[in-house]
Image (cartoon, rainbow, N blue to C red; front, side, top):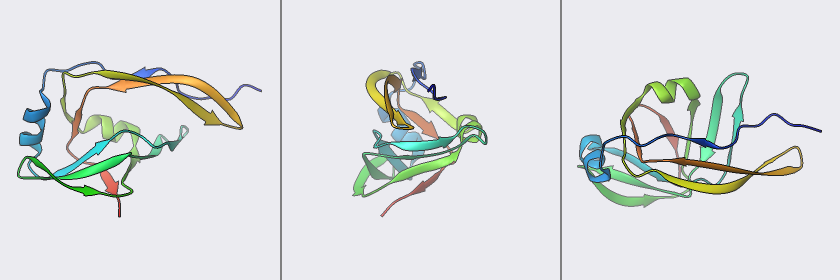
Length: 121
């Protein structure tokens, strides 16, 4: 049976270098990769687990943070994108839903988001 899902999603390159983005953030969090997540497409609410995360202090990467995740409303997060990096990378993966695995791809350059809900241990 067909299942509604999102696939082959990416954000195109911007102009910012990663180092410039760190300096601009000053204090915040840097999330890397994805360990899966979920989206309520009807309400536009999502939650994704990062592979790892680091605190950013004074524009530099600091200590590692465990079990970190990002959640929120899709359109609100997109409205809070402050900088878009110039380092787009695409990745291949699989979307598991309703007992099905479907090949998908996604990608993005580094993004600086001015306001987001991040949790972790």
